[in-house]
Length: 84
Image (cartoon, rainbow, N blue to C red; front, side):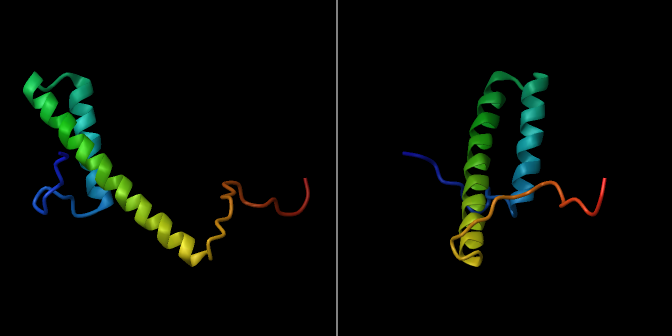
């Protein structure tokens, strides 16, 4: 049985979840945590990843509705203006 994130453990926002996840990863990579704390941090990180994925899925669904189910490719470069 998978453990759900309770309301008290659930981050307030996507940004909060990402900040907490980055902090956990930095601590684990630095070797700052003892074994038991590392396991708990990994478990919490997994919960945060699931939360972030769910948030991104919701936003993607909203964008699809707004775009009429016709998502357009993102062009990272602005169109060239005039010559040269």
